Image (cartoon, rainbow, N blue to C red; front, side, top):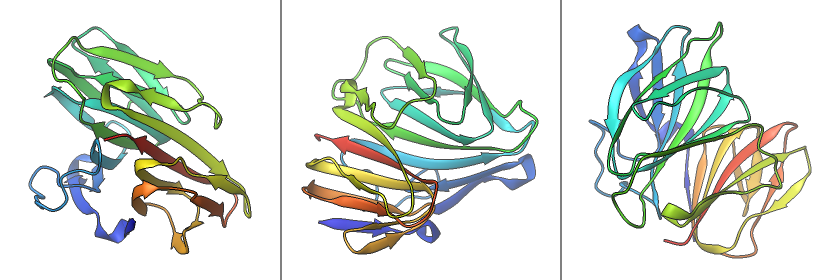
Length: 219
C-alpha cells in the first residue's frame, strides 16, 4: 500500500523574520495530528531553509537518531559532546542523541542553506551520544542506522532512468529535487510516499538531476 503526501500538505513552521523557513511532514511542535505521528521508525522529515547568519540556537535532544542531508549550502554543527563540523551538499550527518545531547545548527556560509533532517526512533532508549559524518556518499552505498532498524538509500536519476526500491515492511520516499513516477504516481520536489509491505517497486526519473531519499525500515 502506498500513501502519497504532497509538498503542499506539509506543516509550515520556522521563523521567517529570523531567516528560518521549515516544512514538516509529520506532527511537529504546535502542529499536532494524532494520525500523523510517525511512519515505521520515522518520526520527522523536516525541510529547513536558513538564510545566511540564521540558525537554531543550542537545544536538547534525547532518544532520537537524527540524520541530516544537506541539499545546498553549508550547515555548521556543534554539540555538547565536543563535535564541530561543516556539512555540505552530498554529506550525510548522524547524531545519535541517546541519553541526551545539546547542539547548535547554523548557516555560517555566504549563501542560502537547505537541508532535510529526519528523526528516527531507536529500538532501545538510552546509551551515550554518538556522532558521524560521511562526506559525498555514493548512490551505491546505503547508510545504515542499525539503532533504528533502518537504512537510508540516496538515489540520483537521469531522465528515463529506473531504480528499484528496497522491499520491506516500511519504505519512505522523499523527493529532494526533480520528478519521478512511482507506482503510477507522479511525485515532485517535497512530495513523499509512505509504502507498507513494499515489494517489486521502482521509480522512474522524469527530469535530469532527480534526487530521492529512500528509507528502508524493519519496524
